[in-house]
Image 1 (cartoon, helix red, strand yellow):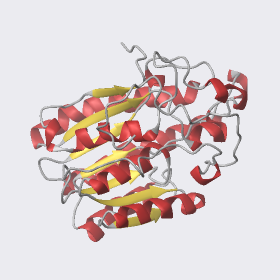
Image 2 (cartoon, rainbow, N blue to C red; image 1 turned 135 degrees about the vertical axis):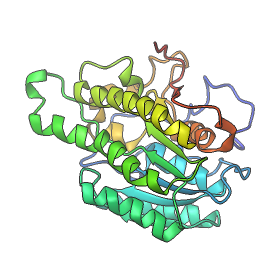
Image 3 (cartoon, rainbow, N blue to C red; image 1 turned 30 degrees about the vertical axis):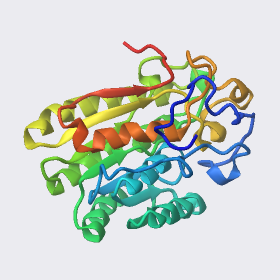
Length: 297
């Protein structure tokens, strides 16, 4: 693929990427993937759609967050990247790609379940970039558990603290610094609409994020701040290999979609660019589904 505008058959795209059974500890690293996800490093071509914007992206070290960070930078935005400290090696690769695009990258590792860290993220964005125009709440926790009896209270709590709370905390802190025209984008999931039996806690948080975003969109629209959601389907990222899915299910990951394959982060990034840009000025409270054709209510 020459770039994201190249005419192509979506059913055969990425046929060279094999979602093999692989298991990683911890949050998972893109650098440890046998078949690494496509982040658009070699293909995303910017056209100035986010020139001068200042963005904060969580989960920006790999997967969808990293692809979005690369796309934002190539569209002209400066980016603050949030990620876990153990993901530093992946994050520094994205920092280098942002700087290669001629934009500012600020790496701020930490834990999204920490309220003080979320406040620091917004404060750093405002101080280092001079303000905040785009907030992408994308960082998340997903760990499969096949039996309800084995889903611990601790995991249930941490999944909510990682996925839902930061959207509230970051938006609350960012909004006072956002001028009309700014954008907040949350990452929900097909799981909010078609939940898997082994992702009870994760699916519930994604539904909560969807609902919170729609409520926020109604409150903030009169102030000129648009809130929208991207709901990915099965996307090939380190999250899936680090307990997000059963290891033995990975070879068939994404085959249930009408396109018959998993998506790649590079295919999600344009959705975030659209919702962050002035092109979507009349799009408010929308959930943009990028899921390979899986029907949603």
